[in-house]
Image (cartoon, rainbow, N blue to C red; front, side, top):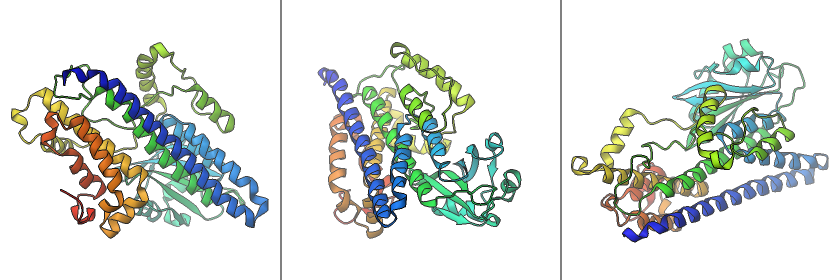
Length: 401
């Protein structure tokens, strides 16, 4: 076991390559499906043949983003081509807080504007996770008073869903002047593409970060190497790819400027400094909910059945095993969303996802099957918790506990 340290960089490289490969496949699949749908529409309406090309370019611009801020900024920039006014509200604890807008006379005043979650249209979007088309009377009266009622008498709210929860709302309307643009179908596709890309980006970053820190056996971990107890997939991240930012700026409105790309040798230190600047100036709040003190305590208690008799080093192995299990199951959910939804309804989820689950189980066992974490079955527990929503009957009769 002591001679297996040489394997860690190999594991890190392979996992990173696999995740990068999945990301490229997903990008191609999204663009392909968009083009297929729009080509079918253009056959019936030849005059709209350029719509498919424009939308494909818009999706590609979103996927150029490498940080949460870049991706959400590109979402608003591209949505502004299909609606006269658009704004993004980050949802935390059922409350929607403004981040940025496009097309409003007072864009700057949108920041931190609290949208009334009790307004019928807002509440329905958050709780039902559906696109809502509604008259202004069902929206936030204070918002319309502050920024103006759309001339068309129609507003649209689109949920940006991450981890099965609404992480943000996109507000769109045709503007204060008659005849303003509001292409509902294009807006919905851009929001869905953004949701998928944020999920992929999160998994890629975790995959690149986790393997190097994971021990392959139960051995002491230096304090400087220990990962934080909560690895937020959307922590602030300084843009490190100037090309992506330039391309997005040329194709649409410029994203935030003035942040230099760090040199390769100073990448780590520069990223830490730039992250603090971005967080203070323009970065949106993390879209994933932070764990509460109660949930952290519950997770810690569930992690080590006899915590009082486990050394700090072994507890760290348990924590990392739990995070790795979470990462594996998150990837299963991301690439099998239709199977997950149908399997939950029919209560045969394991049969539909057997190949993916067992491959991930093997990966987990190879890494943690011979460590102190083997005494707890974190992968199995995460499958039931995340895929079956804590209802083991959803997995079906063939699932082995």
